[in-house]
Image (cartoon, rainbow, N blue to C red):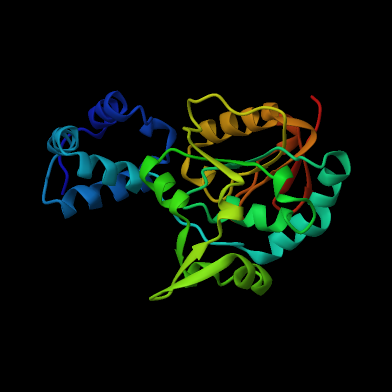
Length: 261
């Protein structure tokens, strides 16, 4: 059992990593961190901070552990059908070069899925997805675009056959024409500047880990980042409480349109 002050630990982690653990739901995050510390056979937060300060591998493991990277191509396919049939036609009626941000993109499954979907309607030259995550390690993994086939279970077969090549042992390599349409960047939703002039923001199954105060701040910044009638696409575990108070119209399940306030 980890015995010393978690409050002091949060302060030291922020100094070291600039990740503000106060913005995360404490019970859930503390349970995860305690499990990691005990796995490394340490019994105090202070000892763990000292360890990550001097051990880069452990530091990277800790940051990656905090960010809870779970993703897959076309996660919740029914929601992607709504995106294709109801949302994208409205966006593409206004612009043939949509500006799209995949926030907290994890291993890249989501932004690459967006490219494949868009490629049905506009040329690759018109597609550029901004994809961000706080975890530098996971971004490097995303850039490699190597995936186990189990993560493609929701992907339309036409995309799998067209854009992936098997390299053995159940591993698939994504094609370069898809990869080059995604601009991966490191970004912290809690403190870094947000892109602007966006037609679509996709941020799914991430905000659930934050406190209510942190969530509201993120949603307000998403609102500022979107163009008029721009759309926010959230995860199936998330909803915005009183969305109209911060300028969002919940016009489809898991989709919110920016309203002027």
